[in-house]
Image (cartoon, rainbow, N blue to C red; front, side):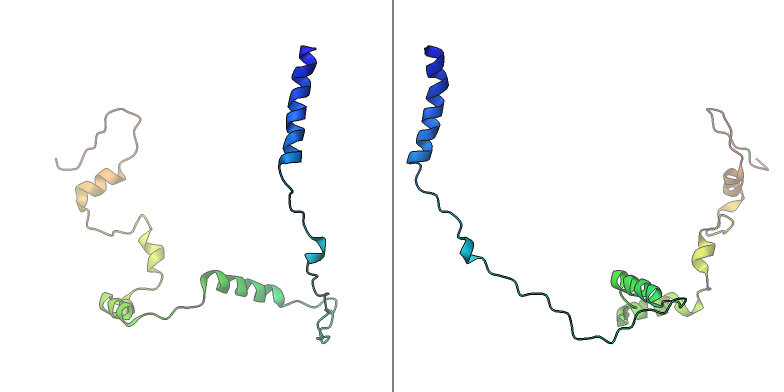
Length: 135
């Protein structure tokens, strides 16, 4: 009897919450607005592509995508133009960015000792050592 009471009591309590909890507001299915029907646009001037012809839309799509991502060429401000003119924009060699990262490009006068150390072969020892000429 006690086990039955333990099982029935929670069910009675939960049922009471539904009865005494108040009235919940239901949705009104007639308050829903209808969408306007789809309409085919009146432009019928498009013709299907002819078989064997090359489509130019792929290149146009790529150009549009690049322009959408990065934008077109932005105008430079007068301050930026002044800085570029003072830095010698007109005297810069073409392709300088390619040669600046080249390992054979000497950017700073490193001196003979530093160049010898940098050109030394790798060794498998724990101690680093380098021999410079004349010392």
